[in-house]
Length: 207
Image: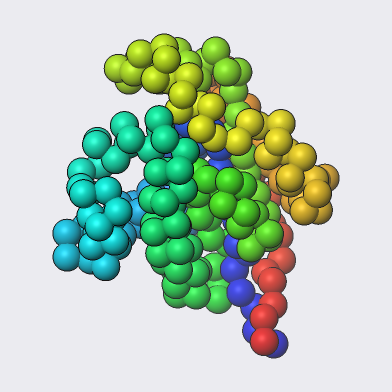
């Protein structure tokens, strides 16, 4: 038996402040892997993922794909079936490469619950804010109200994520919710508290 770092997942709906929280974790010294970066790499020209996406959609342009999959659930599932296995393989490789002495590692995975991978982690962090805040934040990024609403609707609601977390045994004790509806200072203080908790937990063991 040997120790291994605690496997932590950071997730949250679009425009709930997850990227900000990830940046704070990184600034505080936490090792973090970003699923979006892995997804981007998975369909770079010349990769097998790009070939599969090209065959399915006729393009690998991220803007065109984004517009398509947020309107067409079947197209979204097709794209996810190509990308998600590669993303999770990359996450597994990253965790395996962490030093055993590292107390934990964090995988930032926007669609953790949507892909049914929550039980692959020891602990889960969820970012959350009010829906009207999500809409406002997305519209500041240049989306119309309808486009913003469609992107929010394409993801699992916070309440359902919490229900799934409880069913998986994360609640109470193994899940942290970061409320990003307030100021950056309030959000950052929650991240710092979680960092302290994670750093104090014993490592897991594996054979």
